[in-house]
Image: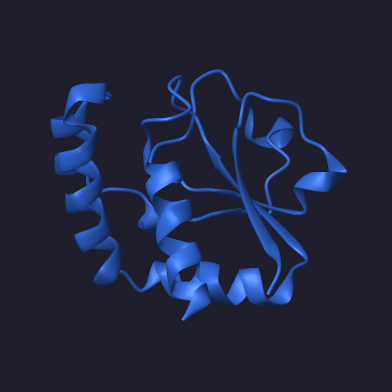
Length: 119
């Protein structure tokens, strides 16, 4: 199993990123698809539209959001795509567009994947 990390898509791509996966359901503003340097855009692993709108990137709602998102992830076929990718690449970077680097879906997804990969 390779290592996984989390990074904003607005940061410069780096060979150390390895396999780059955009985990946002919506395409990030201001990024041209040709310039994104992503290997996979896995929209279906992002939180549902309802959950995303309810959270609204409000840090005070993060714990409830994280709990609801983990529930969605347990029912998501897209998670297996990431698990398979982590197993076949030395490094994988989960890319997100949120400004808040601590309170976003990629952080929850990272923790969820690490928990699944350890078992």
